[in-house]
Image 1 (cartoon, rainbow, N blue to C red):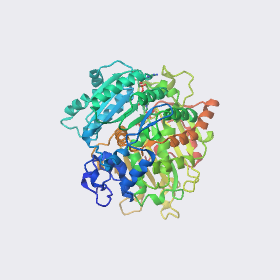
Image 2: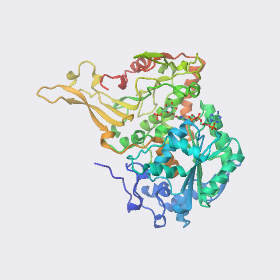
Image 3: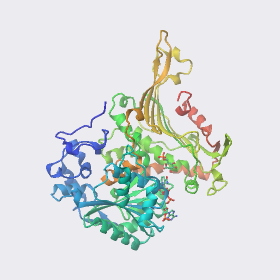
Image 4: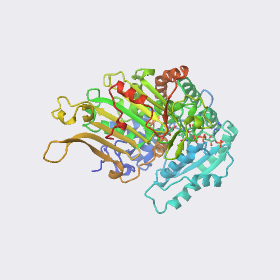
Length: 592
Ligand code: NDP
Ligand code: BG6
């Protein structure tokens, strides 16, 4: 049976969700005052507070306290132009100033449009949003980079990576053409205010005098973030709507460089304008974590040290750093995956119940739990690096075979760590993280191993290894999304033989609709001004505070990674680390 969204009193179908699952604020139906009834859905999403008993006017008053008027401009320390954040638009509606779809535009500038991420993820995600009707009526997409390209060349480049994700619709080709007609290109330097002023002119032409809202997606190396933000904010900010900047990882290499980056960005932007992407937060099953936990009575009461023996956060890829060795060697797997993707999942998994589903409430809880993690000890960490391996006549390269990687590199391509949260809920429960490249399989999952049943009447049926008889909840983020719970069950028949079986929610079987890519969800959120799935600066600080001492120690002591063959299950050290805490990795079980 499908869930229906929780509704506020008097909810109107006009505001009914266009995207399905409940638990997502954006998807909730909610009542809006009559003055808002003509406004597009996405202008209203931030006003969900009525669902908590607050009225819209109060929200506006609150906003007015922080921003004098909607069209007011603030000046940052360096003279960058700031525009007041999004929900003011809805306040404008309340004040009778209309922002009907006819009257505003959203321009998305992909900075670094010639690069890999833009081609692979950003343009395809924008097309998917267009195809399903989630982009505003008036939108324009600009690619910006130094490479010389015409609009036609950009369109040609982009067209190669667009796919018809949505049910292979018949008119998809037509939709692609329509989409591509709204994509343009501007070539410029990243540190030229003049080049951004030229972009501004072009944007204005496309905006045609309408209220303009602008997004700059920084799909470029981090060392040029500040140059771009400076030029964009001084020369290409919207003067009458909002301006937002999406920032890709990596956000620095350690606490200090990340703090410097944040300081640099904040010379030109306020925190509300910065949307720091961790694309794992946009993955369907990661977003579902809170729903699973907070809206199912069978899980929430079990979510503590009392019933949970250990939690495992596992990321593995079956390919190496092919093509990204230059970038990777400066970062390593701990910075590339653990400090962000896995830590974010851990925070969502372990946080206390937030006061509401508002972005600030959720992020407050995430910061609290990250700060409660005990400092990482070197003896609780194992690092590895893949070496060459020959299998069925094919030779797979070592990490150091990459020409952009020094031959004596100690950069880990694999790491496992045991983390402990120092609070009442999680005292003593090991949270084991494992992340690696060039392993035997591609997967990302969360495994929750529960404790033994006290005085289990059937313990004789399980042999000597009682750990094998405990329940395990697995949330498989990818591939082949699923949530399954391993239980003990009687094998049908006259005897009393037990086995382990899975209660399996297999997404492909249960939900035939294709799951959107994480970038689609995140881009749409950025357009809508929904910050829940983006990283706030204090979250980032706490993540770096946790990992920086460990990273420094590894580098200062020049700890040599344990070598593991390309395509294997990784270094055996990871098994010893788990065994130290009486844990067996769930993904290496014969049962998995
Ligand atoms: P690229 O290295 O492909 O860079 C994107 C564009 O930036 C290039 O096309 C180039 O454009 C410009 N550029 C590259 N290097 C420099 C430089 N040293 N100085 C000035 N401009 C430069 O990056 P990706 O597209 O792979 O990634 C973009 C961002 O996203 C990076 O921060 C990356 O770390 C992050 N990221 C990437 C992922 C991926 O899968 N690719 C995954 C997660 C994050 P031009 O020369 O035309 O100006
Ligand atoms: C990126 C890392 O953030 O995530 C890459 O920089 C990694 O090294 C990628 O391959 C994995 O993302 P996904 O969505 O393919 O699992």
